[in-house]
Image 1: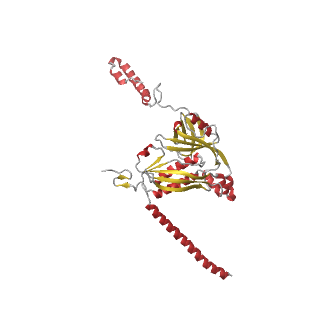
Image 2: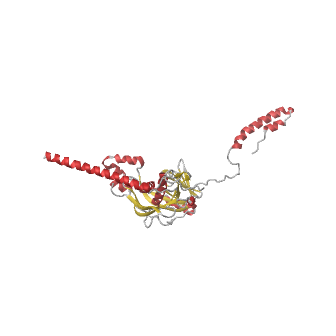
Image 3: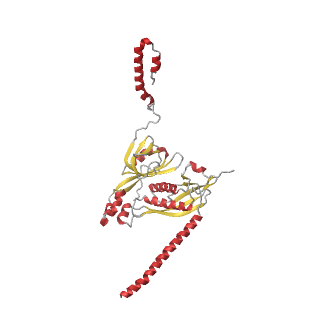
Length: 195
Length: 195
């Protein structure tokens, strides 16, 4: 983007063209006012492709709990698990963790159950008289557990455990295996349930 | 009749109190003795590398193996006994001169049920026993112990892995000198300056 320098233009104007000079000044100031923000805006110019455009996620799963193994994300934080490009991403409101599919050494799915009442409310149920808290412990729901083993850029071995709503881990595993992740338990076979 | 009861109480009570006092003194003495022996055997190392859990022939679910591994990394970092806690396969570990290696091998594993635990309070506990083996750079064993991790009443099954890791971290705390204490006038232990 080029902007005409109004001072240079004005300097060449003669006395006979004072009216034109003032118009030039006004035009120059206007262009400067309009052009400046565009000139210094960090957005790439038209036609220039951004270095790493983030592709749209192919698989998105909300209500996922990262149980353990998120280096930048705190344990037991809830967020969204998605496959973006060739990576698996877990994002919470504050942080984001990413694992490349090619770096995954093993991926496995499992079934488990989690109680409906958790956290502080769960501890409060202990105070319910006549064993009421124990009755509440009977209410639980099935979940899928997705476990990843992968290596970081330095060769360090990592493990991550996610808890997803029931039946949601298999599509993610399928997609990751298709993108080059390794899995010791083949996709066709159902994962062994340890109850 | 009343007089007999009073006599019995006056005889039994001092005996019970004396026994209790003896037990307390004995346990305190044992604690002091073990503390001395532990402090005498303290090793020093600037770095530790933690290897993944060897499940052996036991069907330990992958999420448990990963949770043990990640909890071990976190808990051993918390001890602040080492300047570097390397993951398995980390390329930087090769340059550490006094690296010690921690290996864990599963000995027994029982996956319980959170629901059973909280409803009955005496069944459904999750427990695991792993052999903890720490060797020095030359392969000489420094620690070789079986450690149990369990969750008896409250908490999810994976909490047993946290219990195990806390116990291992405690062993490390009692076996190794802290990283600050290893500092020498010429640098930090493991980095010797030659004149």
